[in-house]
Length: 534
Ligand code: NOJ
Image (cartoon, rainbow, N blue to C red; front, top):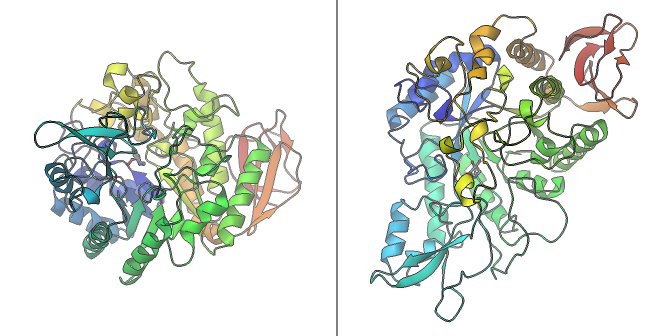
């Protein structure tokens, strides 16, 4: 499954922001790469307070990205190439520019319009304090005070993310009905399913109790302690049971994928019980340190947890919310993942990062289940770690008081041609986030057909993954030293060496692919994964 971030994939009209016709024009890339399906991040009408995760109209396309007809064309062209298409659904919150929110502000406290969202009176003598102490994921309070129609300070509304993203009240039948209808709208247009944004956030604990811990569902939240009152409440599961019925009523295979930052794996597995969603992103895997024991443990736990509910496991190393893994894996092992890297931070070793990223990818693509790739990782693309602060657009940067750099560094438009304006992203030099000059070295045209390039590594891995049916296989662990992991999937053997010294391949092994060359005497060097037939 290949994630396209529409802003940054391909810009056909040259305004510096990627668009749907750009994606359609570059669909053949996905076929050549060997992807089965595409997930499109939001392209709906939006003020873009959070790069489109603030939706003002769930049934249309933002003019930035094209028109509804362009979405239809994209879906049709993808299908004609055998690619499935899933779209992003954002049900936890709307944009503050959504007509419902405008109506809520114009209506009186307690009105039906207000009850579609989460409005509360403030605390303190004149309601000047927020209703509770919850913090926004992007920093600052999770509540914003409104003004009444007479201009006087009024109630507060909840936004777990940006103030431009008011949380919906999923206790209201009207909200539930609306989203069932939105599902049908896109299913009728032929989409193969939905990636469900913040799937663990829709229901809040009824008492809205204070929560004195940090609110960091996307940035490496720990597994210890009580469950936060805003995440992973049991009530969310009823919603997905209803959705499953709608999805199942359509012909063909249509799926729901949960973006749920939920740990441990057993609680995440609840989202993919037989009558709920089909898959859930495995962020515990993404967060796992680059050591053999940690990788072994997370793979085992993930496989067991999903097997218990009969669902496929998923794997993901990069997306539009985290530091690209070609950079992240060069950070000190065991360090909590930072939310962005800037020019004033220590700069990770790009060579080490890419070496580990290639090994991690080859390990991931040998595992049974679904693997999610993020655009550009097939080029070995690093994070933009020296972006000028003035260029940053992620609300995290401002809302955290410039403490967290935010997610812009992984969202930079990707390079297609090394010697073209915007590295082939579009016909002009324009690019909504600045591209670092080193992206020229990673451009697709320098890697296509080049033996040993990261792009050809991905292509070969995806071809073999399909031919050997690895996605439907089983992991059978083989004994190995503490800093090596070694397993069998079907008749493929997979070995990753995390240790400081090279490790000998078994006698008579036939190598299919390795993330870096082996030594002349067939040893697997440090930070290398090899696929072989024993
Ligand atoms: C998760 C999305 O992946 C992220 O980009 C967004 O900021 C939040 N949800 C809020 O919608």
